[in-house]
Image (cartoon, rainbow, N blue to C red):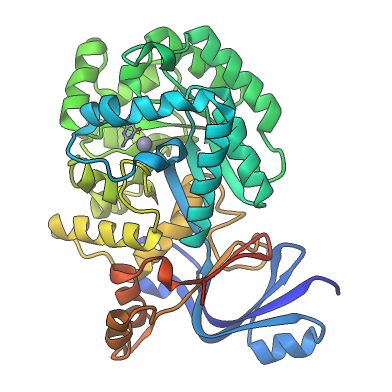
Length: 433
Ligand code: GUN
Ligand code: ZN
């Protein structure tokens, strides 16, 4: 059979959710094979057996490196690539001082294209193969992101970020424009190749009730789409939402009252939730996205990972570029570990890895397509060197099992650990040197 590849190395996937089932839900092989045909994983198993059955397969032997599903970043703002690591502000001032002036530049298609390409190439170099991104208010920014993702063969999600108040003049649309432009973008991009459109009100403070309702109506017309926004990130923001929507029971109620709550809702941050909000989110089956480096960097607070997962919430993991301070999902896993420690919770490496792959994919409704090493899944893969720096290597050398071998890379690793990144069965990034 033509176009058959066999990747050999350590392999790591999941047969279940390790938050529910423990680390035993992971499937690790010290020397395993991943057979790729037609852009999908065709078989997993003993390399020699796979090679004997497929003698024409092109073999990529990665030795002791670890082959995993590529990382899935469940919440990013690609237009904020250029303002990552901007100093000294909390959320609202950070938006006004750094974010909005940068986002205003994305009406220029050349700028939008250049930043989209930079962002996606950085993601691939860090082993991230799928992202769900906010664009800017400009439809051109959505076109730029999807065009760049398509050129790289990536599965990607994004939407026009709608705002009609509490933003600068050149970053505001209206309720009608938000509806019309989002509708046109759905017609242009939804389901084209590996791309998916996400209805995207930025967050409650930057939309009038009329705009939230218009987007709620649009979602009702396209119930299979995701809807992404921000929820309960920072104390000042929550107080502001209370002032803007005095009739709402809480922050989540603002979204629900405008038709913006359902199983396809993906809420970034979700740190300071009330008991009612938790119960309602759980009841509806909406997804929450943990953004640990951003929550630390902007000083937002400590996401209750163990409590929320223990209560059966759907949770994904994200860099939240550019509020987040790293493109690396390794660094993001480390952030999740550290924040949980500050809450007295110890998250197992299996749980961290699951969050960055299968958990994020499932939060985005992509659990059947990407985020796991399993037969039939799309072959978006990352190959990880578990001894990528001297400091990591000397620690990993003492490891007695895969988790001790993996944890130093989770805590101390960066793009130097990424040996190769594969998208749809093709290698698209290879470590230099
Ligand atoms: N809340 C509303 N917009 C944003 C944003 O761009 N980044 C973060 N971290 N929070 C937000
Ligand atoms: Zn965000």
